[in-house]
Picture (cartoon, rainbow, N blue to C red):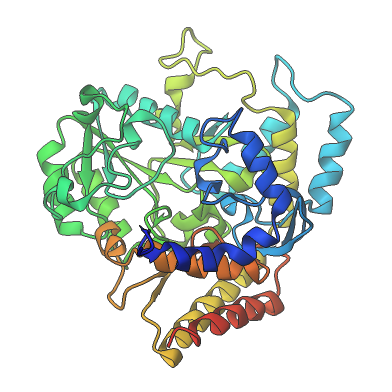
Length: 452
């Protein structure tokens, strides 16, 4: 009897590539089996799950993580890019420990939310005023609501393949089937299960890195379009940077059509001292942040022009938008965020970008050397590997380079050789040196030379 195909591999092939992993992760398997009795989907974060089960991590130190079985790996994902200083940075640990004995949450503001807000406004050019949330998803949700309240319009624009968290309006066309999404020039909105038709009618989807198509769509929708939200570098779509001139084109298009522009810099704040907007010299109307500004603790933030942010102002009466949250601006996240930002200098970002360029160039060179069909994308401290020899510049071109069987095989090779990526997307942390970059490249070379 022939083996059953699974993700493009036969069952025997798949058993082979995961065998070493399973042999070294017995306790993780035990926890995963236990989790099936109590947690929907076995883990509470979709991104962390993969079959047969993920490693259960118990400790992190600098650029290394350790699982319940004692396996040590170099962390090339850093909790989805949130840990720019790596794990358990002494300055962050010291600051948080000092506050823990004095309380973790209060029904009232603390000095630290002001201090963190001050640092953010001084760094990020578009953020004249800031409000804190507990996640990037919440920050996006409130930013979209602010844009609607300020403009009086009802529709929001987003890019095909763009991921902005899990609130309803941005759960449209995140990973759409291109056959269902229609024209590449004017994509049809495709909803995830559970998203209503009413929501779908309020979302305008556009193609990334295509200024001409975007201009046509925005002009057509301008009377109802409150805002356009964009990641300066698309993350979940495959670490795809904006082409030269695209973001400045987008800024001009939105200004010309009286539409607000929102930058989702949840990941790209680590591009430079002032984020991607500093790097590209483009100033949006609103910006959404999260991840690194919490120093490893839950956080989100939205901010922007003072006149837009006045929709939250209750000094002279009831605010236009009510924005509550029991843990908004909680002192632990604020203090950890302050400690993190205070450890970073413009030089820190430049060094990370240099290491990022080294690893991207190294992977590309190895693919050429061994005739391995793959394309590398990314910028600053980010990289992704796509199984195609064609240019990857938007969601649909990335989808063409998707191969679950090849992805899984390479992914488990990394895991079994002391490297922790996330489905072939990586980012770097400040503690990393060229030694860790070379170790990654050595493991990758060991893999590709066996694929010839």
